[in-house]
Structures are given as C-alpha cells and as structure tokens.
Length: 301
Image 1 (cartoon, rainbow, N blue to C red):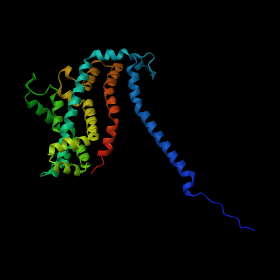
Image 2 (image 1 turned 135 degrees about the horizontal axis):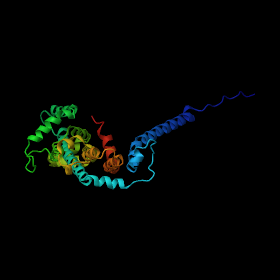
Image 3 (image 1 turned 60 degrees about the vertical axis):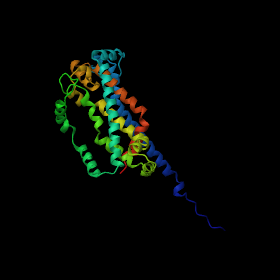
Image 4 (image 1 turned 120 degrees about the horizontal axis):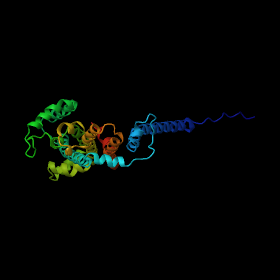
C-alpha cells in the first residue's frame, strides 16, 4: 500500500494574487489621474460655454450648463470692442523677445558657471541663486525708478516709462532661474567632449556654440516654454509701465475690457479663451522637449 502524496502548493511566484493586486493598483491609479484631469478641465469647459451664452443665460437664476443657441458673434464683438489685434501682436512680440533674450543670456551664463574656471565662481553663483528668494514686489519700485531715470530718445516723456522696453530689455541681461536650470543640464554633459574639442584647437565660444548648445536642446526648450508662458501671462508689469492702449498686452487689455464693459461675461470669457489658445498650442507642439528637459535637468547635482 503506497503512502498518500502531499498536495503540491503553488509557489508564491505562481500565485495570481500579486498580479491581480498590481492590476488593481494600476487601474485605481489611472482612474485617479483621469478624474483629476476631468476636474482640471471643468473651468476651461465653463469658460468655453460661457463665451457662447447670452447675458441672460449667464445671470439666470437656474444656470444652464450649455447655451441654448451658441452665440459665435460674441468673439467678433469682443475683438472689435477694443484693439485686441494690437493686444495680441504686442503679447507675441514681448513673449518672443523675452524668450530669445533669456535663452541667449542664460545659456551663456550657465556655460560660464558650469564649464569655465575663474576666481570666485562658486560665491558668484551662490549670490546669483540668492536673488531667487527676493520677492518680486521688493524690486518693483527700484526698477520703476531706474527706468524713469534712464533717457529714451524716442519717448515723448523722455524716459522709459510708457514704452515697451522695460518689459523685454532685462531678459537679455540673464536670469537666476534660467541660469540655474541650464547649468544643471550642462553639468550632465561629459567634460571629455569639451576637452577633446580644446585639444583640437577650439576656443570656449566654439565649444559653447558647437557642443553644449546642440546637446542642450531639451533644456533650452524647457526654458523657452517657461519664459514664453511667464511673459504671456504677465499682468503687473504691463499695467505699471504701459500708458498707451495700443501698446497693451492681452492681459492688460482684458483688465481694461473688464473695467469698461462691466457684466459682459460672455465677451470677457471669449477674450480669455483667445488668450489661452496660443499657450495650449505651444505646449502641444513642444510637449516632448518640455517633459524631457524637466526630467533631465531638475535632478542633477
């Protein structure tokens, strides 16, 4: 008579429970992300629907989610109420100038702090980073006084107040955030590339232009998107320095529109939607470079 054999138990690796647990966790994680994305899209959806409503539908006691009859003429009425075409051109101009200035000046400064060797490099970089903790409101009045004292040959007031120069000239003088961002990326590039180019007779400018800039495209794209977005959404500086309505940006123009056309929320939401669309298009076009630059830049020591 043979002895009974013990039942063979499945090994932990063959158990279906860990796989099911991972699948459940992944499904919950994806569900939370989808729910968060929907919640973040609710204000944008409300802005679109409001821009197509009438004033009666906006102020109705029982508000409606969708307009009964979309009023596309709200966009034409908004566009013609104030010189929004000039506002749009001014915003594009200032955002482009600030982006170009920041990319050029910050990349040069970052290259100097990351690659070149000079006295007091460490203390100077620490001093530059210390400026990040200074609130914007602290330097607002000193900058205004500085621009008021500087002579301007083409301004009717004789100084820079009332012109667009205070809104973009400073971008060509560098910035602490952009310099830090690009320096962290430059430090991740092997120094052997620069040493090999130096042995072949390349000077620092050629190394910067032909080696570091082509390899830093993701970080440069990240800085360009950040700068374009900050300049496009800037509200305080245009209000302080600009005087002529035709020189206003979209943010200043929307503020003026809200003050002159009180209660016309459909037209105001139409203007806000027009101001948001370029940022959405920019992010969609440069999304891959933006995410790659953030991933490769922010964790370098």
